[in-house]
Image 1 (cartoon, rainbow, N blue to C red):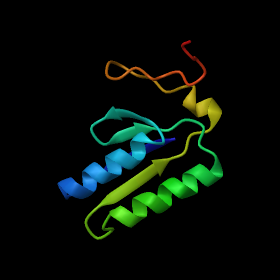
Image 2 (spheres, rainbow, N blue to C red; image 1 turned 90 degrees about the vertical axis):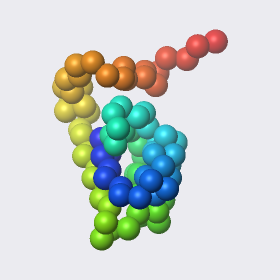
Image 3 (cartoon, helix red, strand yellow; image 1 turned 60 degrees about the horizontal axis):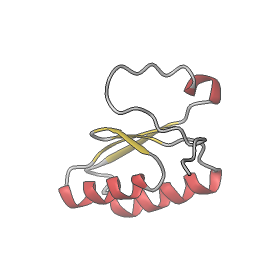
Length: 89
């Protein structure tokens, strides 16, 4: 899933960023990639974000990708995607 946001106020934008860090990886200024969120996690994320934005001024968009589509994302430069299946001991 890709989450993009446009939040006008610095304080609200920082809060949205902080919440999203708990669910995914920051990729660009207002873009996070959240891999393999359960339905419950997604609902919790939406609830938390909706508490902190003002819909009349801000927006959050969720682009839900199927596994086939997620594997076809093309990246040039920027942040490398963390592999969630690799653990360092």
